[in-house]
Length: 258
Image (cartoon, rainbow, N blue to C red; front, side):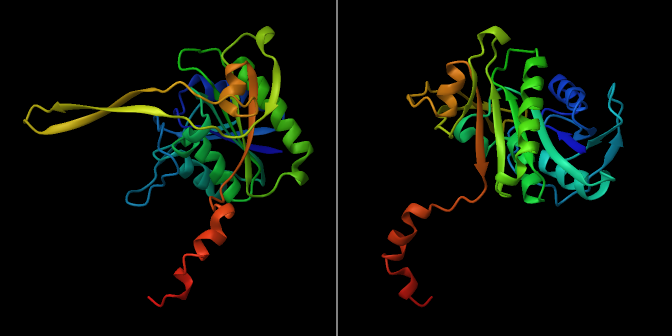
């Protein structure tokens, strides 16, 4: 099988290399990743300037390409132009830092996996839930295990669904196991630091801290990781709120002619 590996931390990121090397145990790996860091770009794509590619050498990987675009660009271009065989899996990561709860809406890592699903390929996003940790070996082994389970059970996974994995930053002996979870709410105390450039023009730098989670449900991804479980969350891209669709119809909007 052929596997497309990408990320949002850039092609030089150590998490990408560890993931790509580990995934060679499952199939032929092709890396198509941003030429530089593209964290928090969400599902942005490049339409107002050209995408340029450069072949890149990654130890132990047959083909690797650096792309001057977003993670979603990398998956689009990789699947349509750079992957020569039929791709069986898209896997994005290993992200430096968590992608938990509503953070997935901003995440370039998760968006790359969403793009894979949009193009009809089973996809996984994987993150090491710490900005300080730098040992990606265990996270890569976790990703390989989940990928093997996904491939063995792919008929049961809906075509609009990806798996989002978050691995706690603890030694193997402290991991409690895997837990299939749902997304929680990730809140921030947003702070805009107002500054002035050398020409006297104001600009803003976004900062702020995470607000401690009030979630207690052990099946929520935030809680599972806090208690040292590997969180595996099925995510789909249909954002329709079916619970209130009939309520909105009761407003009478459909009876009004624009």
